[in-house]
Amino acid sequence: MSNLSKEQTEEHIKETAKNIFFVQGRFNATTQQIAEEAGVNRTLINYYFRSRNKLIEIIFEEAVSLERNKSQSLLNKGLSFKENIAHFIEANLESNLKYPYLQTFIVSQLNKKEFTFKKRAHDQKIADYFYKIYEAEIKAGNIENIEANQFLFNLISLLSFPNAVRPLLRTNMGISEKEYDRLISERKEIILNLLFKK
Image (cartoon, rainbow, N blue to C red; front, side, top):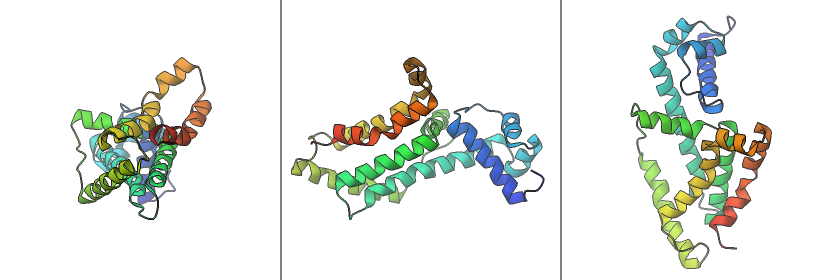
């Protein structure tokens, strides 16, 4: 660690904390535990981030940004609605494999009411485009005639639930992390077949 620059050390601490929260799911990790895993002195975390809460705030903003980036795939006007949804599913599955506890981390922080998920104008643009195309898909008979928000509930549930309850399902099913990751990675076609008419 002594060979790293100030910026590299700061980034290393942040990446270590992200690994602890997003990959390992240890949301209550202390400053000392983060420092030990990063191989730095605890005082360095306070030096770079002022406090554990400030570090978590920075990581929370990055987590929200990662979530928002996944929605970009819904705005590709050169693709069909189903193709856009397929890209959205791929982006989510890829993120779920890399950061299994990312969404759970965001929800846990929102439940504490320490941070807020502020809606931006760009978020509304994506939502407006989705709802407009969704209505056209119903008229074309490509999807069941259900409310757009119910479609989104189904989509997000099918993507997020297996990750949210990962430790419970893995234990009950008696399978390894590797096997669970394989099942997650194969969900794209299963989800598409459930959401769209043949």
